[in-house]
Length: 189
Image (cartoon, rainbow, N blue to C red; front, side):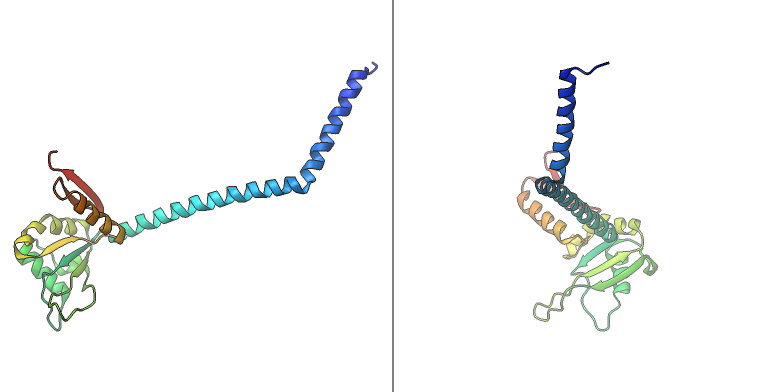
């Protein structure tokens, strides 16, 4: 079968187009565009992974802090001092919670000693079980009469957010924390 003139011209165009595409792919312009596109895609993926990493670190930090409870201004400083025994006595005497020394993983004072104001530093405790933490926090209202307080040890960001929420919702809602999360309950709900 003989080739017609239109088929021959069409094959020439196809071959010519393949050559143009191949020469364009080898050109510096194409390589620059491709390199830029790849760099942008890789940078976007890295940024996304960094954000996920920061979120995972924050979640991990919150998980590590979930059994920490901070007791403020409840125990006067004595030399020498055993914070474990002081916490056990406070829980038994003031809160009516029977915590044993073995339930406390760590207990120590936090912050720098300030000799001027006479206020004792807060004691932070890490309990071995979440149940022990809840029993202390559920009974913390008993401490209000004695100008003592017990609250969760929050991350710096959550502490700032809690203070901001309390300031903004002072007359319209109650603000509280539970398991490291901040909740706002409107008074009319």
